[in-house]
Length: 195
Ligand SMILES: Nc1nc2c(c(=O)[nH]1)N(C=O)[C@@H](CNc1ccc(C(=O)N[C@@H](CCC(=O)O)C(=O)O)cc1)CN2
Ligand SMILES: Nc1ncnc2c1ncn2[C@@H]1O[C@H](COP(=O)(O)OP(=O)(O)OP(=O)(O)O)[C@@H](O)[C@H]1O
Image 1 (cartoon, helix red, strand yellow):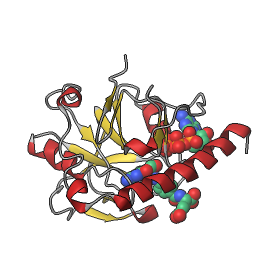
Image 2 (image 1 turned 90 degrees about the vertical axis):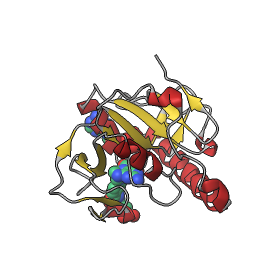
Image 3 (image 1 turned 45 degrees about the vertical axis):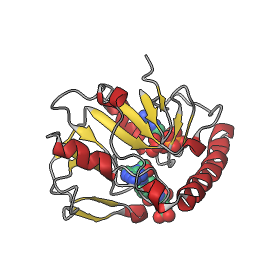
Image 4 (image 1 turned 60 degrees about the horizontal axis):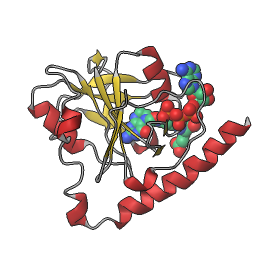
């Protein structure tokens, strides 16, 4: 492992803990209100008819289900990531039932994901979970490289991060393969859109 990877692994562990502790400490009446619907400056980044990729949050992650239902109700095709093996790329599959989630199955890491049979799509706008971020739009994720590889393969997609405020750090080690974000939303702020 090189120096940067070691540093990233350390940061990831600390930030994952901060994220989990923060989410667990939120009073239910607060968690019910945050990330309810995308704020107007973010909505302006989502063209009519755009395919919108989101995620099914795991423990501690910023919840994305309300945004998913919101875009689905507005007539957008919504999609969620599906991962099979670490070595295989992640794909986005149509999520047809954001209210009942009857179209999801158990995936790795306790994540729920669409079945293999749901159509694969390429989101125009992608809301993604962060482990850490900077106010300039640098990000660090779970460490699988799934999002970095997917974004490298789909440079036309606009990437928006969702996070708790406690996940912000002053600087992150950046490697050549790291793909920056177009904007970040937290319960209190919007960072970007970056030019
Ligand atoms: N909500 C949500 N969905 C998401 C992500 C995410 O961060 N959040 N992902 C963001 O990437 C992808 C899933 N990421 C994954 C990352 C690692 C492994 C994995 O198998 N890791 C270990 C096993 C660890 C364990 O089971 O405890 C391994 O290295 O073998 C699987 C999926 C797609 N969906
Ligand atoms: N475009 C790419 N092509 C090939 N490998 C990549 C690419 N992007 C990232 N990787 C590999 O993925 C692994 C994890 O990368 P990194 O530490 O940046 O994770 P991360 O940004 O936290 O993960 P993610 O992108 O899933 O959120 C690294 O071993 C890296 O070499």
